[in-house]
Length: 358
Image (cartoon, rainbow, N blue to C red; front, side, top):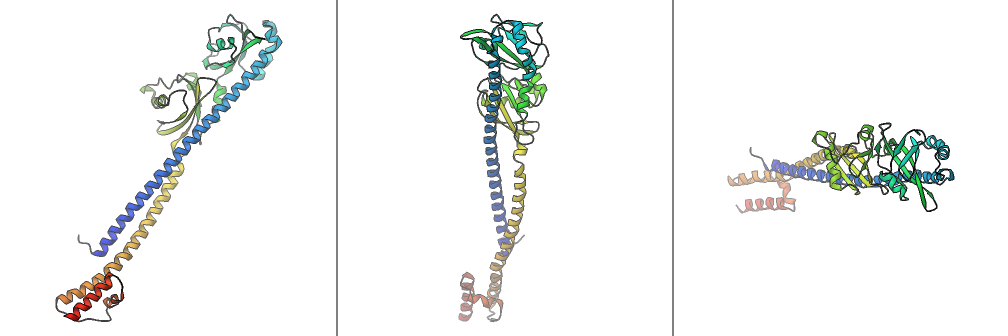
């Protein structure tokens, strides 16, 4: 197919406009997406750090309350009947499943379940308390209720002597109740893991009850493998941002370690929500592309015709000259090109000069 000069100009100009528009749109979209993701990652990490501060404050407050209880003279008496009477109202008041006292030999008695005597001296949290350190246990599955619980443990001291340990058994849902208020966007959520990958708090209570471990997930566990790999690459106990595929979409998680435990808090967002406004931007870019393309085509039409029309007119005169036709119509369209001060004007004047010479 033979294209005349005007059509060639229009075609080439349109191609340039399309390339520039696509390149500009893609670059703008890519930069906007990258900037949004970076801002989201920074916000998630900050949210995780703030979440850690909140959880730490809650645990510190509970430990301080228990330390005040352990400092009561009636509790320091280490007489079970006196201790029971002094503590039984605190169980319901503080929202505990039960409160107990452990003697240095590890024997533990509880206020509500006083018939049970548990041997807890080998537990990490009781050993820390016997050394004078108030602490929070890992999440455990209660042998009594078969539900996830955790323990607050503080030493019962008289001056420098440690007389025993005051224990508070609490429903592990207390942590999930806190993390369920966290998240980024409508679909975002938060969870707590132990340093071995065990789930301690999650919107899905079954994951906590089943002690789901992300680091030991296998291919049979589906997308949990992706989550475990992301945490492994970051390193348990490290702060940072991870992302992975889960349930058909990409998730971004800000991760921060709790200072008083070996746990990590993860607060996440769904990529489709994070980049939701990018879809609007895509629409705007497409509309801009169409408008820019139409303007470019219009400009190329004008430019093509403004260049090709005088050339066509002058080429017709040259063809007549080639046939020794020296006639010249001073009212023709070509005559006006004599006044132009560009290449077209030079060609027109050269043709006139050639005609006069002949």
